[in-house]
Image (cartoon, rainbow, N blue to C red; front, top):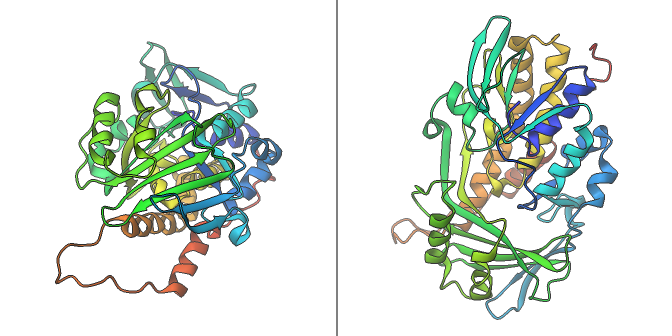
Length: 389
């Protein structure tokens, strides 16, 4: 399996529980700490409970109490609380930094799973009874199945399914975040400043380390051509696009060059006609990114891992059957979350300057409520406990 962030270790947990031997290869030299705060809502919380990790995940939560939308002078305009909507609202009851959740999952699986850090799959060749894999470090091995859980920019997907550009859909927004010293008096409340006229926003969120905070920016960008590994170019773009945003932006940008965990990328979705090819399958963002604006990337990864492992085991490890059943169960849930992501981005983009366009239509709140419910709870979790291993 390629990728040791969230989807990969979660799948490793379930595969081991079904009796499989698992190898996870990760090109980074170690787990990446920090990162964006991610949420577990609805059925994803149930998956965590079935993993036996509820206590560990809750212990690592950010403990964010809620969110204040603020004006440029700091005046609070709107408040949302973590216990709104049964804990499945804008600020979820289970909110955790991506790196912290990755650590929980790794600690849970490290004793029974082989992890190869600082390496990657360089080549693979599929056969009727297995997949021959050559690692960049030179090792050559054969596996029954290979799963790509290596994110939006999946190298495995590109090598087996086609070029990045064929499947990644840029939604017209760019997101950046990095940690900063908590010199803002930030307690347990997230602060968000929005400039609707330009479609830009700046945000400060608390993290478990009270001496630090997470700065986040989003801004519209019709085209995105910055390499996802060119950090200097990404920082230049961020400064160019938000320097005049106002609120706390100058103070946040003052820490940009010192940030140990800077991240910037396009807000994008992955649209694939199928998530498997032969003995190679895809999971999480590599298969079906709904974008960070869906708020459900972690849920898709955790639920997908549960279903993929369960359906493969139930099919006697026959990839043709197991992959198809996994996708049949997951795709409606994924499509609902992708629609949420697109709607959220559309709500953030600046108004169309064409006077002939007219105001946007009023949303159908009944339909939107039904869509949100499908995105949070709209997938069945079969009981795979009795599946023979």
